[in-house]
Image (tube, rainbow, N blue to C red; front, side, top):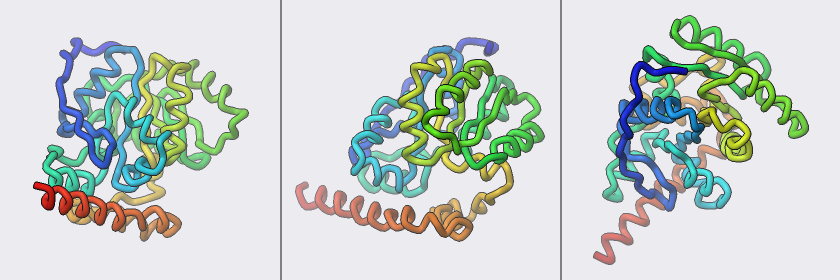
Length: 255
């Protein structure tokens, strides 16, 4: 793909929160960074962990290692921003994966995009809805996420044929991160981005929380009502909050 001009390198700070790296970027800056990665045509890895993913990364060295390797890693959760501010590291704002992509799609130069993930038929419906909203968007292929390991090379071949600039991988944490790390060299000209349940939202299968819920940091609860099976995952949120407060109190004690 061609951008109208080559973006200048974007300088940003990378903090560590619960021993996991997070980039201190605003939404606007994160979009610029994504555009920069795509314009370079050298591939890249984009992750957007929320509080439950940060909690999991502490217990899962393989997941944390992937976050260490990411070219862009943004805070997809009000709780992540809250924790950074409580611990004195102050991330500028929440930069969720869906907000980052929708701002990117709304730009004049969005490149070629491939959707991989979700249940059969969902990525296709998401593509149709996105085309309606973003006429400049080039979706060059889709495939569901219910494929067997022995089908992986077929998926890679399909993506190669489509020649996307950006591959959106909606397989859930940590499967999507593991898949991206395993296959990034095979798709070395494409930027790979983990998107969780974005396809379900774009396809209309799930509703995103209203802004009032998002501002209160309750988007996780709104989604839990729609998907009760996420209860076990949601139970890590109070554990995350307790750990952050413990770190804060420990810091105050030793000052």
